[in-house]
Length: 114
Image (tube, rainbow, N blue to C red; front, side, top):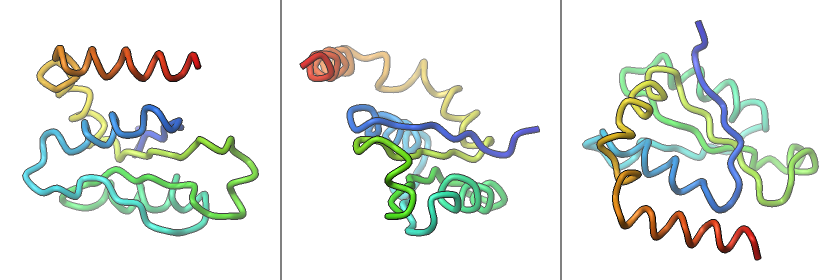
């Protein structure tokens, strides 16, 4: 069974995933951005988070040695599997079903065309 899910994010959609990761949390820090090697922020930190009582998502690929391997607007968003399952479960009740989100989504789409 997979222990985490790694997602490559572009500049325009990273906030969405971070907001959804915080949706079911009483604490505001459901997403962390530790500095480390590119692979540590995609594999090691998410693995450690998956073993914790309160797993958090991890934003990564800040390492200068990893940056040449990805586009300039790309980061990693890795989520321990228990957290990922909760995020998917929360979608129907989240901001993603609101009129406000539709407006934001249309604006993002328009910006990506430009």
